[in-house]
Image (tube, rainbow, N blue to C red):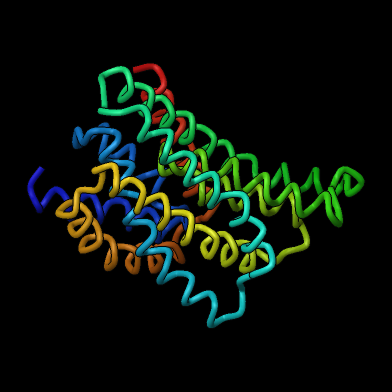
Length: 259
């Protein structure tokens, strides 16, 4: 890949992120691996660094608007940051990347993409069921423990595949806290993803999986494209856009899992 392809990748993902609000991981990593042939481990590591930077700006904006529930962020971080360190150490223990390990990473990316697509398609139904059956919701200490567990589960997905902190994280937060406003869910999910992706990204940098030329190109292309996508989203049906994106992710996930 040359620099123009780096920038094009950032533009494509930035445009879709701006239009749909879905995190770039579920789009960026498959794009890099399938279309541009980037090694899965490099795609994951570079995308985590990319996500940490872009979500950092998103968190600053949401903090100004008061849409971050920091109590929930802290609980999610308790579960995720410890697991992130363990996940990186396990990846380090596995040693040099082999063909079989690359294949395993590709399958992990595919599974995470499929879960993201499912969360996009069925989020409304899941939340409605939770709201209609409040007795199944944890509360008090159980709710705190469930939140910590969710943070740990999302971390494993994110560290291995760079996917999960966006649509999947937002869906699980909504399940546990159905009373939150949409802006609070988005703000909390983005704020929680910053330390998670930053720590996982540093870990992958330590493993030698971050391609800095690629990272710079992605950032250069994505920033203006996200703004353009946000402008276009006001003229398009959110339901149609999300359904199309979910269908695309299902096809991508199936290809990755079956390859």
